[in-house]
Length: 68
Image (cartoon, rainbow, N blue to C red; front, top):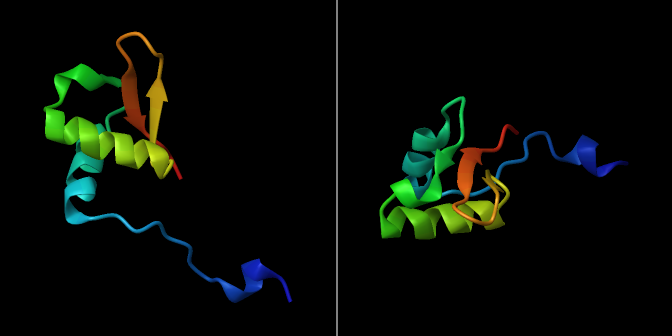
């Protein structure tokens, strides 16, 4: 039996705060990371580690929600 047959739905746990920030990032174009408050930047960094957000560039990075 394969793992895909056992697991019908796969989800990544997110807090309410992370969900609110993800909604802000579901725009069609990338948004500058520095345009967010410091708290939102910390939340976005945790979403990047969970692969729910993509970080583009290293100098003045931009972020966008990952399409899963």
